[in-house]
Amino acid sequence: MGPTSLMIVLIVLIAVLGRVMQERYRAMARLHAEESIRHAAGDGGRAQDEVRQLKERVAVLERLITDSHGRADLERQIEQLRDR
Image (cartoon, rainbow, N blue to C red; front, side, top):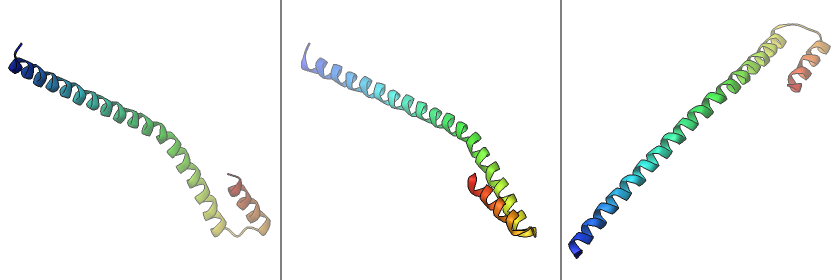
């Protein structure tokens, strides 16, 4: 095998290895993207729960501001908010 043949083999080998590495990185990127989507979907339930809790707290605060309850009732509701 002459120097020209060796050079051709090396060029082909480098090209093939480059293509294999490129496909490997693409596959890893797709896997990472799919994992991120699954993770985000799992966080959706937690986010909805947190929004629900915040809405409940806002409703209590609105009631505290607009209603004219006694001081004891006001303190009790504030303590309930702190306990959450």
